[in-house]
Length: 96
Image (cartoon, rainbow, N blue to C red):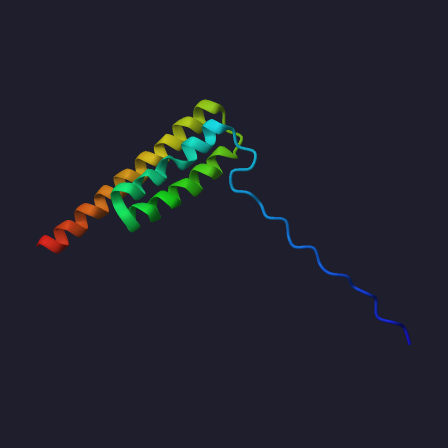
C-alpha cells in the first residue's frame, strides 16, 4: 500500500486590489460617482458603487487616455441622471 502524500497548510488566495495598477487620475475619476452617496443616501450609494465598478473596468481597458476620461465622466453623469430620475419617480409616487 502506498502512503498518502503529506499536505501542508494551504496558502490563502492572493487578494486582488480594486485600484491596483491605476494612475492617480484614474482612481479619482473612478471614485467620482460615489459622490452620489452624500446627496442620495442608499440609492445614491448603490448607483455610485455601480458607477465606480464600471469606471474601474473602463480604466483597465486599452482605450486611449482621452477615451477613458470621456467614458468615465459619462458613467458619472449617467449615474447622476439615473439617480435624479429615480428620485423624481419616488417623490411623485409618495406625493401623488
